[in-house]
Length: 484
Image 1 (cartoon, rainbow, N blue to C red):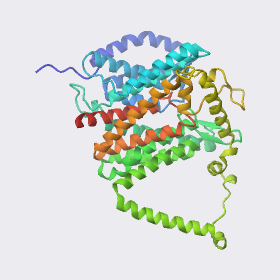
Image 2 (cartoon, helix red, strand yellow; image 1 turned 30 degrees about the vertical axis):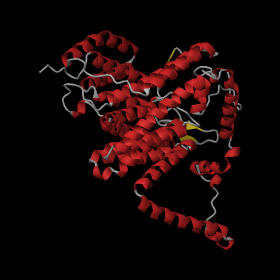
Image 3 (cartoon, rainbow, N blue to C red; image 1 turned 90 degrees about the vertical axis):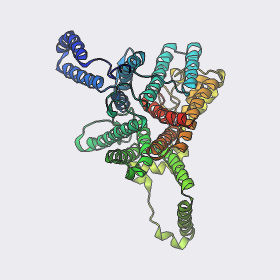
Image 4 (spheres, helix red, strand yellow; image 1 turned 120 degrees about the vertical axis):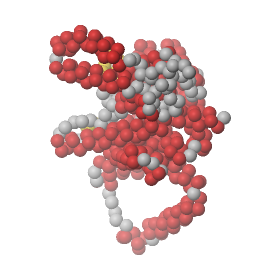
């Protein structure tokens, strides 16, 4: 029987020796810079040792944690270096060593081909048509990094264990990776809610954005309030079907699912993000339809009951003599949440909706000058400004943004990749049972909700969307392979 290689990247004593050797000049430099640098370096070194000794399970923890902290960045030469990029550099390097050493087989998902075509088209358009080629190449590099995060996530969450890995904890499968995402997502959502409480009570800014009317909206560890809202949306939708099946799961699954659902919903509401609310409503409706399809009799009774209640409400509102029974509430004079809800009744006069509508119409009028491959990554912001402010503009809708950046060919490749991933996930969901079915359902709902939310505030340049896509591929691939 051939000797099995250890799953860790390096033998622990060698790790300690190399770290000790490298730490001597680094320690002298950090001591000269100041004590905070010494503390930060000590924590980073301790974290690196933990990651190395718990690899490969630590890889997904590191990437998912970093994606939950995209508000923190380091700007070097005009390029924003997010925590998720540093995490990718570390985890990607360790994974590459494993692949080269033969300890892990690299999987190239079927979805990777249209994504590769999308990146090639974006690069070509940036070199040929972008007003600022350097800026477009920097933004294109960010897309390459997040697509790489998708590929790394799909491989790390593979159910295939690394040869010689001692124990289940050394190698996470896709189910365990979803548990990690729920746990960390609940923490990110809870931190945003904490920031909403810390400012008015303690005047401690843990992550809030101040509005022109004197109010504030929490962001927590996320880039801005809309991003925080869509992040919480995905966490809550991932946990929704798992929490419904939690009665048959171990206590740590029940704890993570309900924490993710409750904190995710709380953060979703607190973010005041209307498109994230609509995304949750859309995905929730699909979940309700799927449930009704599997439980037709119960759905028929519930539908009849809701229909009867609806008829009663119509009669109540239609009969003027009974209208006094309905309390009159002026949402526009209430708090921030009530005022935000009130805007749904008058979207035509909403300033944000008007601005975004103007930008979308203008982008669609300029795009036909380069219809096939577009203007290049981020080209719109290099030329045009907001119609109501002297700051560079951006295209808020995901699909119109891709159409402007990469043209018909690029948008087609991007949509094909999403459709292929969704179809594979749906087919695997139909064949799965128990926990895998609940996890697949949660991942599909999360992606549907995110795509809906990204029609007004897109975040395809951040990692959390691609992590969900990678987890979906990791869950679906072995189920479809067994079926084939």
